[in-house]
Length: 249
Length: 258
Image (cartoon, rainbow over all chains, first blue to last red; front, top):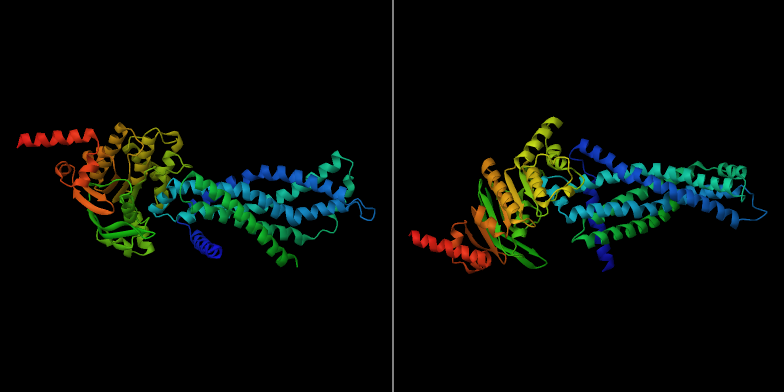
């Protein structure tokens, strides 16, 4: 029964995405909406990304120092480990799990409310491809802006660790800075950015899907919003394993 | 003119519409009336294509809607305007933005021309001065008028109104009814109004289709409704004491005249 309903939902999702990726009715309107979505989904998320990243970067640095106090470990390994954690997992997987809550619930509740207030029916009656009109700008905007958020996250996380070296005497700034630059593997940056693009697509498309097919009223919009966050979080974790296996091995 | 022939629609084995046939005339206010749950909303949604019936024909001036391909349906939709029960205005757009929307999407008019047309439509529904307000900042009656302005922006041939008076006070309801009636006659539109407001039925019902338990029970106009012997229709229309008195008065007056 669960398998049947999952397959049925997967089929509906594929049809939904096929509709979303059709040619827009008017390119001018599409570009205008995409810019609006970049502002709403991307730029508005920057403060949250900065706050979280600074604190997580600082915590990573402190944890690394406290848990690797071994004379055999070089002091710069704190900076190195912080950098690699941020590049490999935090700036993509963990950040996207956090954004699934903010952006995913925002998208699902917005589209869900449009559904229950018949605004989507109004678009359909006018002859507008409502899936394409509502969903494609969100996917394009969020996927397009995700690398920017990811880079912001990397920069501010490392800054968080740097602040720890300034305001505490756990580790010297020079050793932290050396560790940040030591044994740098450029592919880790690309790996993180590729993952963030896939996760951004999952968040935007899954949340839109759950919002679009809401039936009922405000209660169902809330449920759809929760389901969107839960489903996209699980999919992010699943694809994290798959992409790590594919890209790092 | 829109013709519906032998329309049948079920949900989960429960038949909502049974072989419903009806004709909706151009330049007239056509009313679909019936109790809640009688199938009138399903009938309207079937006609506009939000619900697909299992059986039957829907002819828009002879064009079979159910046999059209996607591109023909898209073209037909540009000839349709619809006023939803809850107005269905776009929350993120201003009043002017809502009316401009179909013009921006479906015409090659310049921005100036679009603005002129949108302002003309807003003037037509007596809503000058509310252009910059958002739907949440205006009253229910004003929202309905904005929805009417948006529906007529593309000069539709067919106008559908789903319970246009729901949630409105009697005075505003009459204003909306008069507006719909005037627009229908002014532009020669085929207007279909889904309602259970008896003021609308007796005020603007030029062609009334009564749906009862999924069947088309009665067809007539606002004059004939007073003399109908259809029990279900009498129970529905003259359910309140006020309307029973109105009927009694009108029937006795007509007898005196004779």
